[in-house]
Length: 70
Image (cartoon, rainbow, N blue to C red; front, side, top):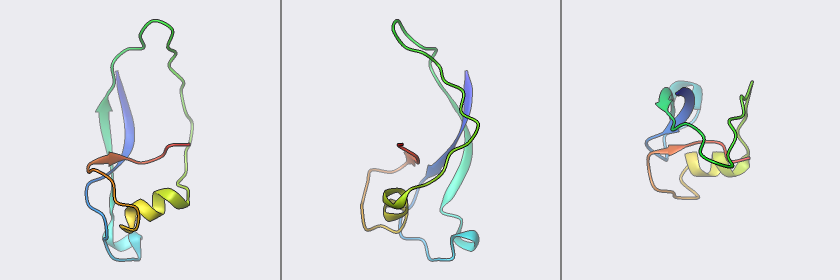
């Protein structure tokens, strides 16, 4: 099954992010839900402050990273 996700490949790109484009929207392949799991369709999502801290490099993470954790 396919889904779309905002993927971060590189931290510390300059602001404004509308110009430097740190996030790439990509189609990703997901495994089907396993026993005891469900698939939830999301209509929208946003970024929180900790996501922005990862993008600007003040909270380093392993790259690439799919953004959004809440």
